Length: 331
Picture 1 (tube, one colour):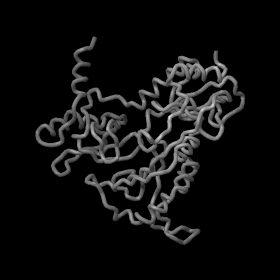
Picture 2 (cartoon, one colour):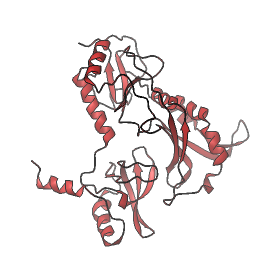
Picture 3 (cartoon, one colour):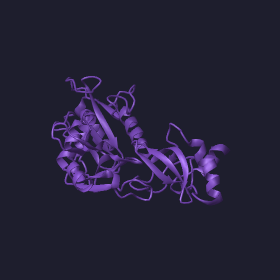
Picture 4 (tube, helix red, strand yellow):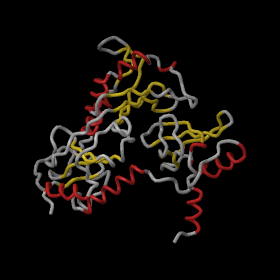
């Protein structure tokens, strides 16, 4: 039975905020000001903003009036910054849950229930920051970033909307010491060291050449109404960048809600005959932090719901998970 307080919170969690007029000031005082500076994500987008999708979680750094409407300076879950009118935000009573986190939690519990993931382990921290672990009883060989030789690393995605790769490129007017030419848009050595395979895919795709040819002077880039540089989308004929990013994270198995289960890398470390991810994707290049025109986040996504080919194995299905258990040596 719901308490009166939980009922009030649920009611407050419905609907969106008002960005102007007397009600706007009331909503700012009640729903925005108490959360400014919070270290946790307090608000959820009720509507898409630029290339930030509906349902995204944000935390608020400050609020201000722009053209008569109340806006917040906010940070999303990937660390990118935005200026958003509060009319695009849900009231923070009981905002809609993060579907990606909910799917991950549900899948982790399913893996534990079937004994595939050790029950004492936790998701998104069980190994090198990946979402779940697979105990392969038939495996004795050591794997990079695995806790033990019999554990494989897994990553979950709730559908194809979440990014499958992300790295920041930077622009500099300084000359390169080796070539004597301006550095322009480039990948910093620190980023390349952290994501070597994904960095190679960015270079192979021609994104840096595209940016240096068509966007050579970030200071004079056209901006959106929020002041952010316009986002750029470029189609890609395959999903190799996504696989490279997963390899950088030492992932062996990818589980995508509604699509199935895939191997990562040339060899299927589970021995179950999992397919590689295939399909077609798109690059999304956007200003990382409002006001910093010299840094852009390069994210990779499958191109919509048809961008990822479905697998013939899906561990969300009971018949498939039982067959998978046998392959791994579980009873």
